[in-house]
Amino acid sequence: MAEYGSGGTATTVQNASGILLPGIVFRYLGQGAGKALTQACIDLAQEQGHGCVILHTTQAMQIAWRLCERLGFSRSEDLDFLQQDLPVFGFRLGLPRP
Image: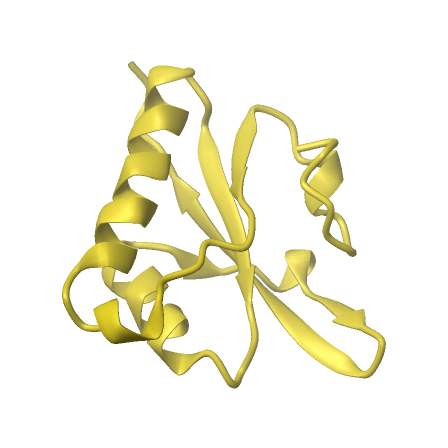
């Protein structure tokens, strides 16, 4: 997380993986690419033995916001920050311990 590159407290979270700037080409939206990419990151975090996954999104990115919630991420206000004047919202997914 030290190299996650966000504002706020995310870089101080221990035993965590971060998903940073995943991007889906517009024509592939709605075809499961974002879900598959996010799930692959979650799986990798579990393989690494991490306790949670952190990511951020904005109010304008409602597709990403809903995907996070469907995959079990919860809003984590302690991870929120402002990027210039843009509010950026933190999400966290707890992972089961092996």
